[in-house]
Length: 227
Image 1: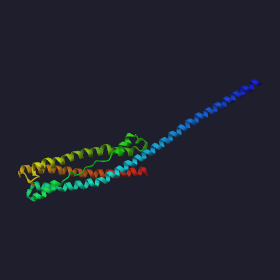
Image 2: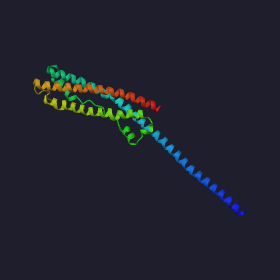
Image 3: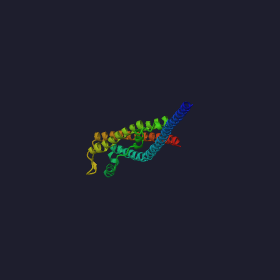
Image 4: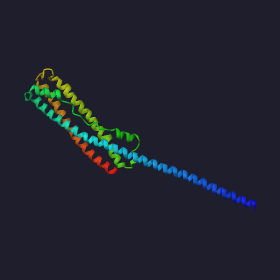
């Protein structure tokens, strides 16, 4: 009888020990699972906060477009005036031309804020949003449209500087505020360069408008997702 009792006690102990061990193992896995869920939730919230920062950058870009557009329109008016002057130098006095050429400034182009987007991409947060359509739209804006407008902006800036700093300096005596020469060929060349520059300006104004429309739609999409 003694042996039987000892055997039963040992079996009971083993069952109890095994149950407690299993409970500990299960508890550990549950804790790990809950911790993982919590970390995923925190990461997802951080991704949403990062998207909100991207949205803020987009809103700042949208406001900046007003300044870009205003300066581009002023540049267009100035270029139109100089085109008419190059066709007829008697249209403006030397003092009026001097005032234009000394006070012109290259109109600003679009240089968007990318820090929030680049940080989000580097942190691998896009997948945490679980919104592939939205992240594709935002990515398309930053990686295609903005790269294109930045490239065009550099070309536009370079041409603007070339026309006024190089071409005009061959025609205009800044020190004496007068034409160096009224050679029709030189004036025609400068006028043609101004016409090309005007074309660039009109193209850029059109692109600013397209970027504006894209930004408005994109901000609305982000607001709807974050709401």
